[in-house]
Length: 133
Image (cartoon, rainbow, N blue to C red; front, side):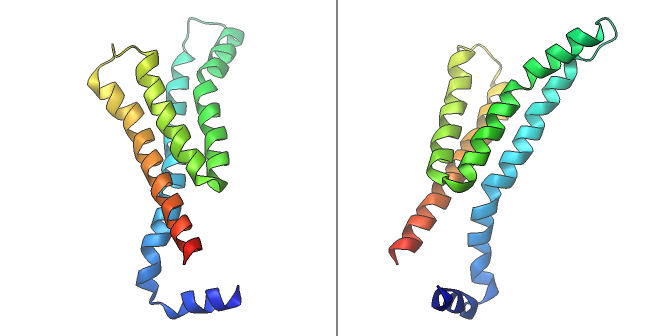
């Protein structure tokens, strides 16, 4: 283990940047996407509803963010799971809306999930290749 670290330290720091970016990019984008999806839950707060119904509506609107958070936590360790899960979630959004939404909705919801899926997949490939070396 120490020889692997010493070999990695011999490489110029610029060669480690793509690996670091590939490791952290899907995770950071996943957190950002969860925050983006959470913004949609704020639309339940209006003046014409009582506090209990607003709280209940907020919790219901936060279910997608909670699912994404669970997927991200599992994906943090198991990159291939993250690649498959984000891909399935992106496709399921299209299937559940039956293709009736505007193109911009698919780009803003499914697009980031497909990007995160691809990044987790390439991260998994990098790890697999590194273990094979």
